[in-house]
Length: 504
Image 1 (cartoon, one colour):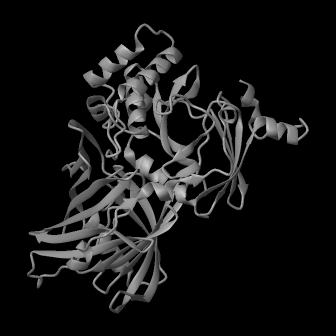
Image 2 (cartoon, one colour; image 1 turned 45 degrees about the horizontal axis):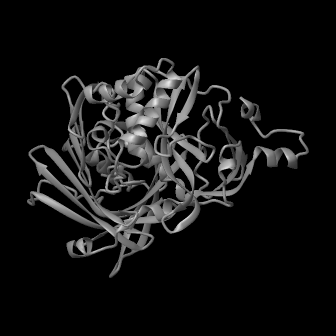
Image 3 (tube, helix red, strand yellow; image 1 turned 135 degrees about the horizontal axis):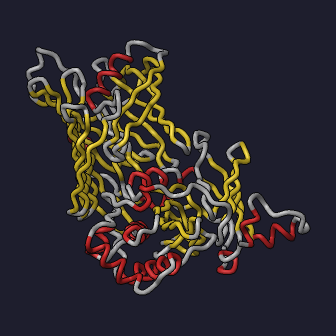
């Protein structure tokens, strides 16, 4: 019924799939539904949903198309997902193709007779195949459509729904509330529709998507919040859906104002941030790291302490932190050769990471604004990208040198970005496990300072980047203070939470 995540350049777009109900009297081989995509009332794209009955299988194909602007440069974006299921909604196979500029990601999954899932992921020409267990009770598009159609007959019901997210290759457990019949206005008419609200619980909080279905179970409208703005997908005819729209400039919505100018001296000091979260559903918007301590002050208020040196150790590495994957191809001969060349004769892991970070900073010769999200192998080949590409290449090279590494998603302070000054912008860097602590390295900015605020860490899968940065529109930084300012204000009586790390 809907693929939950179709990654954009900076944030997730939740694709609201629709479909026709089928019966033995349906003679049309394919039914097509068109939807227009609106962000804060502005048309930014279109979606085409095709549903086809082939023998005893149902094939649902969803195509999302839009243009995204980054720093004045337009980047074409297309996401095509396809699911094949039995007539009663049992999953058989799926595929997803995502194109951002010249980069393509292909994910194919097939359920085997023994119930295992065979996954084939191709990123930048590198193909990896794995076999894993299919999550029990997880459904694809048709299974979701049938579940929602059945539930629409029971207003007031709250039911669980587990869907498989092709982008993250994980099952997602939803709680769905059947709110009842409502009259919904469309441009030229009004329809009475069944309103259902899906809630996805995440470690950082919950996300809601409102859906309105007609009597046949077709989704006629979907709404959610993206970067603090309303995103609507509304059924219409082909001419309406394919009409010209606006290019989507995600960065303007993702920038967060700083309450003051942060000087180089301040960024080399301990900094404490007071932050307000506008979305009450965000219960844990930031993560604790060995350089960041987070305290929930209640009522949407948070305190974040960031240090250049480490505090107590958090979350030691696992085997996955040194393993290659589809995004961090640390076993690739190209990555290994780059890592060995960069490391040179360095012996200590700290020295190796310093040399790898400096190498990556020099190696990327172009800032590729037309790149949405490239894997480490793609970056190694084309030598261009932005902060995310710097981070994935460094993480892969660290793993090639047997150093546990994670990609950190967050934001960084800058005096100027585009036409704005004193702002925090979406950013990515790397944490490496050295001397029993996670230490941060930022090859894009050349160094790590306390202007970095971490939202999440990951294995390089773009899902984490898009998922974390979708929350930026709900974050407001109210104050920033140095250790000296806090110490002097308190008369030298105390250091804020976790302050013992400031002197290490």
